[in-house]
Image (cartoon, rainbow, N blue to C red; front, top):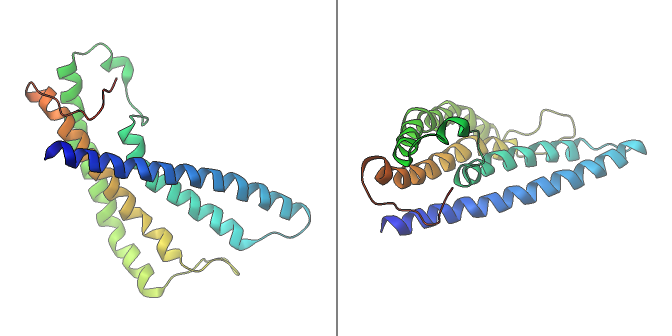
Length: 174
C-alpha cells in the first residue's frame, strides 16, 4: 500500500515536471516572438503577462519534480562522507524541520491573498493585460502543497534507512 502511494505521488510529480518543461519551451518561443514584435513596434502586454504567468506555473509546478529528482540545492560535499543512515537522518530532519514547515507557511500565508484575488476575479494590473490573475496566484498554495506531498514521499523513503532496516525505493537513487 505504501509503495503504491509513493509511486502515485512520484507519477504526479513526474507529470508536472513535464508540464513545467513545456512551459520553459513556451517561454522561449513567446519571448522570441515578443522580441520580434517589439522590433517592428508591435509589443503586446498580454504576451508579456503570458510569459510571466507561464514562468510562475513552470516554477511552482516544477518544485515537486525537482525534489523527486534531487536537483534542488543539496550539500553533497558533506553527505558524500556520511553513512547511508546519517544521510537518511539528515534528510528526515530537513524534511520535518525545514521543507514541511516552509510549504505549510506558504500555503497558510497565501490563502487569504489567493482568496481575495478569486473574490475580485483579479486581472493583470497592466492596461490591456490578461484576465485571470487569480489563476496564476493560485499556483502559490498549489505548488507548495505539491512540494509538501513529494516531501512526504521522500520522508517515507528515507525513514526506514534512518531508523530501520528496509527501504521503500521505487527506483535506485544515488
